[in-house]
Image 1 (tube, one colour):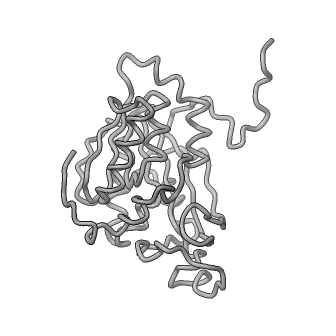
Image 2 (cartoon, rainbow, N blue to C red; image 1 turned 135 degrees about the vertical axis):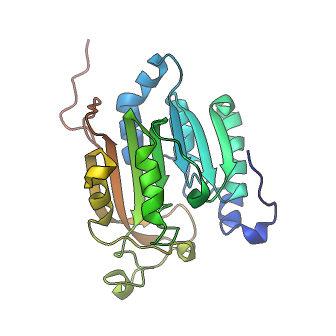
Length: 251
């Protein structure tokens, strides 16, 4: 772990992650959870545990799910308090040996090519300037193995906190942490990156939606884009979220 600072005044999310009921809840992102439930158990069949990286890991809701599914996870965030909570939760779940925490700005993070079987970026590309986000995306996609999965979630211009239309015209309540979002994605922008041939990805799921968040502060609305993709040419046993026409239970 790289320790940057213990000063809460330098940690925008300190209070949100310091609460007894941690902001953003305990449950992993539903699309990621569905993928792991269908494919994650196979991680234990690797000669070595596959590697995952969780960028903007926060307090660890996705990190813990990845570790429980059999991955060795590197959790990256600028919030030291968030990473503290990951280590606390990992110890309680007996997953500490599978999780490494790193305090780092994702723009400064070195990511080698062809290393990670899972790359997660839940609301992090929207927390950095628009001019920097494509370079981080390129590092993410290049770091995937031939059997890798990439999950990304960003706030969109539909968000009531956005300074662009249609979000700026919304009369719905805004998140208490909206100040951390500085790059609202335009319609189809994220999926456009994934479909760029240079990304070498195959999109399994993409959705732009409005959602309500009751996990922190007063209930508020978000505009989100959600992407689940795999390395081009990789065909995992994915049945959707929720699973469409799943295999019947065997007697």
